[in-house]
Every structure is written in structure tokens, then in C-alpha cells.
Image (cartoon, rainbow, N blue to C red):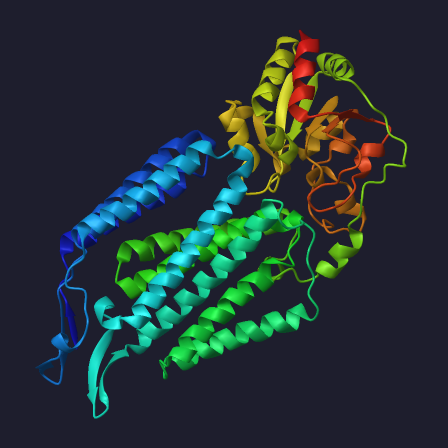
Length: 497
């Protein structure tokens, strides 16, 4: 049997940290309270880290049949606090430096990279617990004629198996998401032959091995689970196309939470369990909400792009041989200054050009001309959930001018000008008409219903992240503004002056 001294003050500290994390999620649900939510999250994490450091040396006594065999096994009697603090310091320096230098356009890649680190941490903790289970308090020593060995508790084996599996899937899946978001891999789905059969077979094998691990803790079982989990993470994310990447980022966030929760059980750390469960459940709920907003099947996306064959068939290059109208900054300034209402639709092109500040300046100029200005945000605009909201908040755009798709879509038909800046897939009417399109069924912003559509785009030769041409470019009420988004908006501001 095993006795672990439990300090009630530690449990209370972890409970307070958990409450702070819940308040953080509550605060992050609205732009107006997001800063307060971040503060609660930092306070909760500080409490959890300090409590863990103060109580990192547990008193563990292992007894088997009345005899003390603790001396026969290697257990952690003490941990060098200096080494721990040094590691935390190095990580803090890297994190602060990265956060200060990272461009807003690279935030999705950064989030994916963070998820991969959480997954890898879970794998390493599970491996450490497997290699030295007595030190983690999850095993009892057993003496046999052949010698002594540590028998891992069956429940701990389940926790360990699930933790290493989810962590490995999170790591390899996040690496692929990073490569896709960073442009190292194309946004189009990569369809492997018989991938559904392979995915289901590998997942079934992982679950079967986790079950078998409860009765046989042989090394080959543990390391096979790990290897297959790394493989399935790669296989699940590769077939998912660019249009669904925001859902993938949210889903991987959920996976990282569940991996942390599983390792929390292994480490007997209630703070990790609470935090992991909060992150896992909130990420899953967000993924489900986004799938509903995109008219996607949640199961299809997490299963690795089921139905992507149709998506592949609809992708294509821009059809530049079709007639289209080109406009200038002066044309755009005149049309918008004469309008009663202008709806601005930002997309990833705005993020790439870092045009959010000058865009707000343009909106301010329009309001001086008596124009009513609103911003329309699609749930999956950009490369991660809330990407456009973050950029607009950075530019101090008033929150009451920013509207979600379902709240503003009906207004386009009564709007004089829809100003689309770098948003392709989320404004593409093919989602409503072309069943072979990779974005078919996804709700889109009805910009084509406005009296005039001003579409800011670098050139006519490119297509959106999903690789689909946009019919709005060629409509009679559309004027293409071909230039770098920031440069074009700056010229419009000058023309408004």
C-alpha cells in the first residue's frame, strides 16, 4: 500500500487557482472583459506554480506485506529547486522574447507551436512516470525470485496510456498545423490512399493496446502506443484543408487540455486536472460551435477530413480570363464618402499587411463624413478563432462597431458599400451554390448583396487559403482594388482628406 501526506492548504491553493482559471475563461468570453480574464489566468497560474514548487517533495512510504522496501527502489528524495527555477527562468525568457517579437500575422502558428509543446510535455511526463513509477507514487515494489520490480497500478496505467496517446497526437498534429499555417505545406487537403481505413485501424490499435496495457506493462506496449499516436496525429491533420484550419487549431487546443488532465492524474496534481479539464472542455465546445458556424460535421473534422474528396475536386486557380473591373483609391474614397453605411469585412490579407491601424483611421475619416461604419467578422476569418477580433482590438476599434456573421449578414442588402480587405473564402458565394467546392455548406458573408463591393486584393492571380476562386471578383457591382492592403487603405485615407 502507499501513503501520501496531503496538505489541506495545498488543496485549497489549487482550488483557488482553479477558480481563477474559470474566471479567466469567463472574462475571455467578451472583448470588454478579456484583459481582466487574462489577469485572472495569470494569477491562477502563479498560485499553481508557487504551490507546486513549495510542495514538490512529497513524503512517500511504500509498504509491501508489512516490509519497507523503499530503499530497494530509486525514488526522488529531493529535487534541486535551483535547477527548477533556472528551467522556469529560461522558459520565461524564451516566452517573453517570442511574445514581444511575434507578428500578429504569425499568432496562429504560435498557438499551434504552443499546443505541440504541451503535447510533447505530456509525452515526456508519461515516459518519465513509466520509467520510474515509484518516484511518481503510482507503483508498488514486488519481490520475485528473479528480483524486484515496480508494479504500476492498473488505473495509473490507463491514465498513462491515455495521456501519452493524447499528448503524442497533439504534438504531431500541431506540428502539421504549424507547417500548414506557416506556408511550409500547402493549404489544400493531402489525401492519402485508403486513409479512412488506416486512421480507423490505427485508432483501434491504440485503444486496444491501452486496454492491454492494464494487464501487461511490458515496454513494447507502452512505446508502441506512443509511436502509433505520433503517427495518427500526422494522419488526422494532413487531410484537413485550409478552410477548416481554425477548427483544427481549436481542436488541438482541446487535445492539449485533455493530455494535461491525464498527466495531472499521474502526478496527483489537482491543479493540472482542473486546468486540463477546463481547457479540454472549452476547446471542444468552441470547436463544436465553429463547426456549426461552418456547417461542418464535428465528427468529420476530428476524424481527419472525411468527405474531403469533394473538396479536392472544387479547388482551382483564379479564373483571370473572366472580365472584371479595376478601381483606384480615389474611386473607393468617393464611393464610400457618399455612402450612408459601409460594412468593412477584414480577412487574413489585412493581417498579412498589418493594415488594421490604418483601416481604423479610414473608418474614422468616413465617420467624419457622416458615414455609418460597421465591421463584419466571420467565425473562421483568419487562421485561428477570433483572429480578426484580436487585430481590431489591437487597433482600438470600438467593440460596438464589430458584429458577428449572424448579427450583420442581413444588413448587406441595405448597405451601400461592402469594403472587403483580404477576405476571400468567407465571402465566396460558391459555398452556397457549388457542391464540389471545399467550402460548400459553410455560411459566408453576403457581401455580393451590397450595392457596391470594393475588394482589396494583391492580384487577380491568387486564390484564398482553401484554393478556390471567388465569383464576387467578376460581378458587375464589384470593383477590384489591386494593391498591398495597407498601401491601398493609406491611399484611400489621403483621398478622403
